Amino acid sequence: MEFLLNAQQMKYCDSDTIEKIGIPSLVLMERAALAVVDEIFHAGCDLRSVLVVCGSGNNGGDGFAVARLLDEQGVRVTVAFAGNEDSMTEETVAQRRICENCGIKTSSNFMQREYTVIVDAIFGIGLSREIQGRYAQIIDWINQQSAFKVAVDIPSGVSADTGRIFGTAVQADLTVAFAYRKLGHILFPGTESCGKVVRRDIGITADRFQGGIPNVFTYGEEDLARIARRRPYSNKGTYGKVLLIAGSRGMSGAACLSAMAAYRSGSGLVRVFTSECNREIIQTCLPEAIVTTYRDDGIPTGVLEEALGWSDVVGIGPGLGTGRTSEEILATVLTEYRKPLVIDADGLNLLAQQPNLLYETEASVILTPHIGEMMRLTDNTKEEILEDILQTARQFAREYGVICALKDARTVVSDGSRVYVNTSGNNGMAVGGSGDILTGVICGLLAQKMPAFDAAALGVYLHGLAGDAAQEKRSAYGMIARDIADQIGEVLKQIDETEH
Image (cartoon, rainbow, N blue to C red; front, side, top):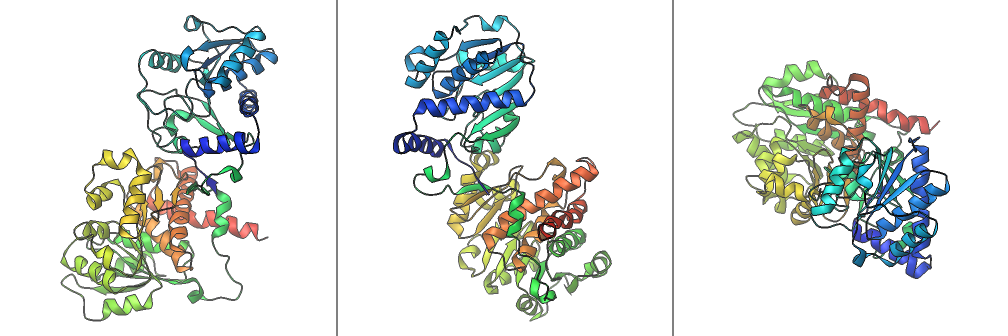
């Protein structure tokens, strides 16, 4: 697990290290500059001519230190000051003075030359305003150059908190992030400006967090170990029973994909509750599944209740349709079910018509809306949702007492307090049925007694890893949803391999 910080949290860590631990700011700056120089050499850049563009803040101070360290290594360095003399920090003044004492002068006509490497140290994580005037001209000029571009901590113009672009931003090839990755390194569109992000320790550790551990995080492959190991002495009941209420006329595939993913994720038994017209298709597609059906004109008394009582977890919505019968099914589930419940697709579309049902249910609910479904659930515009996708998910989860897995290129999962930001997956997953797979994966993890928030977050991560494996095998152009399901087992092989 890796914590993701916003600008304020990073500043707190920085100041705590300086004021309470006693490590001087210039020492931290020196460590940061050493890390940048190390990564520049590691990247194998053409160092015939390097430009370091510095701003007034401490990011600029880092830049001056980078220029000096490169000069010490015999690199031909040009330094440009793009900031305001009157607003320079004490540390930046000191670093510029050291450069000058070493014979490194700042250039005023730096745009008249060509460079092989440009280091961006104009703005750091504290930027919160639109970039205009000369700053915008310099950044646009940097982006037009063919040089390899290195960003110090974060590309100038990217919001560290949301990934928003403040008018324009440096398009870096490499970003050296200090201590922790920030949200702006991960979230779109800012992540597209970062290039390769390398995190480097500079002496600011986790015990520097003021006010407790950050509540925003992401997973790495080591977190697959959170999935419970299969027991030597076990049976199908050990790994839980999933009921998927899915599929309608012409939409049998959604039910098949969800059920397949639930099995692939480790569930012991999967039962599909669907329209009678889908029986033969599902039994042919997935003979391992139990199939219980109903007619489109209504459900016999007790059939749904029996299926609910049989299950350990319910997933509802993929391909369900939004007719009267589907509406009655959702209402029954939310009213009578008291175990983990995953709602997706048409379940969300039906829920948008009566969201107050969430206040009444005793189930532990996970919602998995994409942006369009979230618009219907909240009456917010796409722009309002994406302005701060973390806060959108957090606020909705808190208001309705649910877990919200808000799907986008960077899916976020929140229980109203904690926020997981997903970094696995790829654009080949932008294909019909991908969301149905996710529903099945989360249900499969829930069936194995994983806590709801963990199942939602790890389910999203596992789903993305399977998508990455499918892309490697098929390419982003050739992927279909079934490819994702087929790769879940391949990803989970890592758990078996760590046991031996």
